[in-house]
Amino acid sequence: MKNKYSVFSLIKNAFSYHENWEKAWKDPTPKKEYDAVIVGGGGHGLATAYYLAKKHDMKNIAVVEKGWIGGGNTGRNTTIIRSNYLWDASAGLYDHALKIWEGLSQELNYNVMFSQRGVMNLAHNLQDVRDLKRRTHANRLNGIDAVYLNTDEVKKFCPIINTSPDIRYPVLGGTLQRRAGTARHDAVAWGYARGADEMGVDIIQNCEVIGIKRNGDAVEGIETTRGFIKTKKIGVVAAGHSSVIANMAGLRLPLESKPLQALVSEPVKPIIDTVVMSNAVHAYVSQSDKGELVIGAGTDDYVSYTQKGSHQIVEGTLNAILELYPIFSRMRMLRQWGGIVDICPDASPILSKTSIKGLYFNCGWGTGGFKATPGSGDLFAHTIANDEPHKLNAAFNLNRFVSGDLVDEHGAAAVAH
Amino acid sequence: MFVINCPYCGERDQQEFKAGGEAHIERPKQPTELSDDEWAEYLFMRKNIKGVQFERWNHAHGCRKWFNMVRDTSNDEIKLVYKMGEKPPLE
Image (cartoon, rainbow over all chains, first blue to last red; front, side):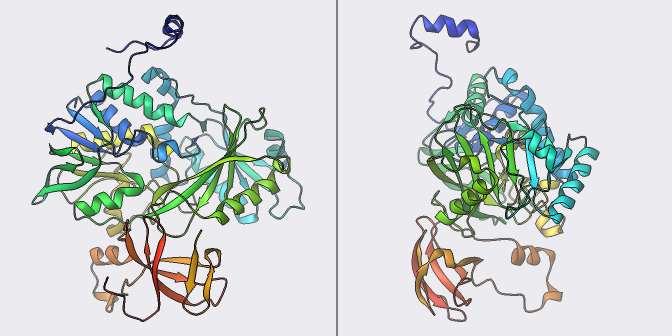
């Protein structure tokens, strides 16, 4: 049993200069065999392991991670959480996650700094206005909070936005989801890792998967840089590298991996207390608790695994930011980085069984997987434990690309993909 | 960002180009005969290789011609460009 984090443990540890905190998770050597192995130690993978142990009583499991946990897209996103998706299947999936977010810090005894500061999506042309109004209605029919704002209400909610009718893409209105917001991305990975570790899950870092061993139509284990691990169930949660792992098992996926960039500014005093996203000009911005502006840019159009991305993408985003927020014109940017996102043709994820027995994939989250982390883990754990999808992720099967029953969120999901 | 050697215009900044995805995916000769699995394969399934892969690119803000490229996606190094209709190099 781990010591509970609380104000008392904080005071107690202050007396020993915070040098005696117990380790949040162990550093085990891989066992010969597990009941299930999760490939990928990001938020989604760790959450999957956590819920497998907690809700499905599978304790003899491992998470293998080629680098360090939370070092991939979990640590590279802009931490936005929302559930205002158009289609019923997506609304069910993302709102399931949002509901778990609302109690996650208490559940994990780990402060994930979930802040429901609201997410506002802007409309810049007549089609945007129509689309956003339609989405607002769809959201409310699905029990998701959403309101449509006119230009004055947008200005009132976020006063630093330039709502002049004379700018290149004037603000004609917007939608607001008040339950949406942000969370501390690293804390999500660390909190789930600590929770999973406590229940006996082995979190094995610096352990890259180099092969998947099959016996006919079933999996037998994984070949890693730290030796062979025998297992009958493999859950792959490898984000940008999903196709690489699929290739090892002789499986084809409908994914393309592309660089997505983000950047932060120097820290300043509180200036924007919400998240503002714009589909048409592709710019979104929020402010971290440290005071940095967190800015999300777009994806490049070519496949790349370099975690870099092109300069003109950042330039285009900053042009849009400056037009919408002239007050930021003299801000200096501190850091810029890229992550590799695996994009599905319909911009919806895959949480699915495959044609190979015991092999499960959780991928295709594209540019917006962070918000779904707890829900994704919960539903993927259900899928692995029961060898059947939960009703909330049944629509997100791999077979939809054969049947044609796509969940087409491209352009519908309140942000360009 | 990288420099691309357009087979028609020579070296230009990557900004002028548009990536067109995996190359040498053949359009089905008999679309009416295709099974759902074959359609899925043609429309959606991609190699998405980490390493050397064949791609189509378009010089969108230049001569607007399409061409093929051999590129290493693990470091964005361009190995070769060749014109549409030419056979892909074996290696």
